[in-house]
Image (cartoon, rainbow, N blue to C red; front, side):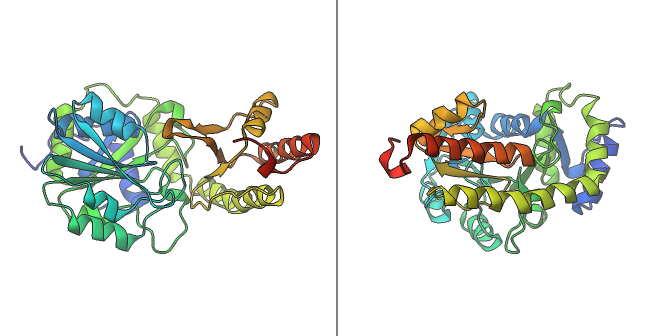
Length: 316
């Protein structure tokens, strides 16, 4: 496969690719591959790099699209145990076998809100066999304010076998327009173009994407909002005797009694269950607008006042 790309980006997509390059400090935008959301890019990677029977590792509480896409491609998903809801580099390395072709890692992770540091990511890349592709899904990277965090751009530029995925569905609130992008080596980009459907990214999402990455005022406003309301929500739950888990994103997980989960639904408040991970007693709560955040807490206060017992008296 030629390492040079001659057909992409096209005239219609070059504006967005260049805008992404400027926004994220990427010097060679030809290594950016657009997709119909990062989900399509994940499936393109499994289609391109997995043969039937090949293994792809994902973490215990990682993004569910990783094992789904692996199975669709005929591969075998392998789950690496988490350490207190955080990905473990050692656990991932212990899962490596002669059939391992891809390691998927959401960093920060959805739905737990935890992350691995730059040092841990580098250790993972160094200790992985060179034949194994490391795919870093940094969908929520824009929210992370930790100094020891990296989304993976530097790893892509320093290695030939690392891919970083990003999406417009989170910080940019464009989930319905289905727009994502990958940053990778020339050879990997050329391979992805070879399996990429001819019609994926739609014409409406392209100018919207350009406007979004250039709207620094909106991004700053979103981060400021999250910096206020994420800790506010967590503190309010703590006042009610709950124990929300720490998070570097715009959501967090919390163990909630069954009766409380059902009560929220009755109040018209829909929260994300972790039942698909075998943790039905946990929910994921995203930071919303001020009225939304206050409505959640008000409902929980009403719930506990109504039953007049603490959480330890309730079934999970």
